[in-house]
Image (cartoon, rainbow, N blue to C red):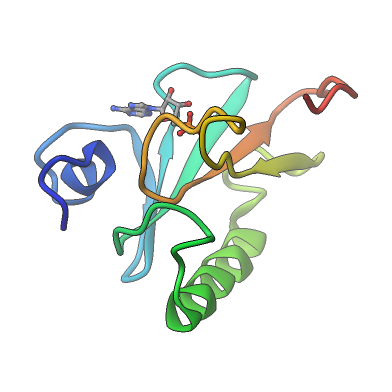
Length: 114
Ligand code: AMP
């Protein structure tokens, strides 16, 4: 755990969040500033900044998280489809330095990915 990391503090229960799912690998919460009708964050519990920092073992855990997500889409309101995004660094406009995947859906999204 990194005490300066807001997502670590949410995972530890120190900061409240709308948590929709939790297991030993990850939490899924509602983004506090939603960009679409459904905007969730899949956050691995282990603290690492991004896929560049990610170890092989962490990549296996992340794959398990994504597979689990595939079983939760109906209950999360994503049955009609969704978009996964992970911002990295300044150009990617990453604002929280703890790897997370944005899960965006609940409506027809823009074709514009940028
Ligand atoms: P990024 O800019 O890709 O690093 O994404 C960080 C996301 O975390 C943003 O979409 C924020 O709205 C979201 N966020 C920041 N603080 C919180 C919080 N306390 N609870 C839920 N989402 C948050």
